[in-house]
Image (cartoon, rainbow, N blue to C red; front, side, top):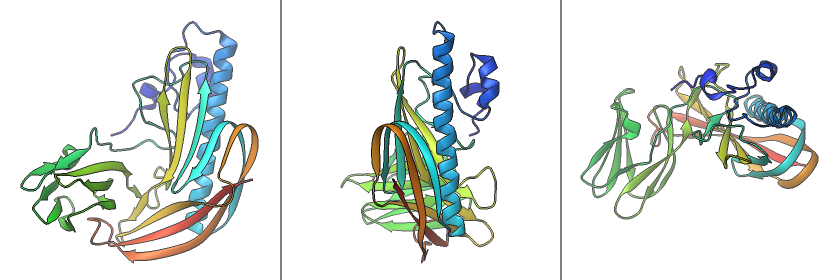
Length: 283
């Protein structure tokens, strides 16, 4: 699915939109004083530019095996956790359209499952409605058939994390009755400029007089189609990991390790997975 910027970005306040091309913004500015509109848009624009740059720095550190640092101006709650950096702000008007619960900030393409798929022993389901991706279950195993890549993986009964099939990444839970596929994101492709390894998404709540925006920065597997190896940058928190209020912090981004493992039993596209470990802290 390709998101059109013209559909999801600013449809009001045209003059200011020209200054912040590439920043995904919503609508509903009518009736708000011009200066208040301007301050809100500039604040959100600044946040998204900073987070996009932070995502680029983490991606560069992981792929090149180098250390980076970045000064970050904050006005909200900032937190680093395992494989995710979250930043929450509140603004006094609705910037984003309320019908978007996931807004891509530094990328354009994603294939989202509209709901979590479930399958019980003796039944089957097309994952994400994809007729080339069939999951079936019996009393002992879960079988995922990727008809596009002509590969099948067989997983023992239980819970499974980071299963990579076609363009999707899933966690799978087993509750004793059924398996549930929890969509985590998509696979990117190594060497393409419009496929960054680390992504920024906005999650929106509230409307009308105020809106809370939570930004999540996380990294995804990148596939090298020639070698069938995937590279996945993993973020680990280190040192100080949270701050709230207003001020400036410095992100310290340190490449720490690289691990390669056989992934053929957990993926229909990645024969091997190379994890690039990046430690992130603030000061």
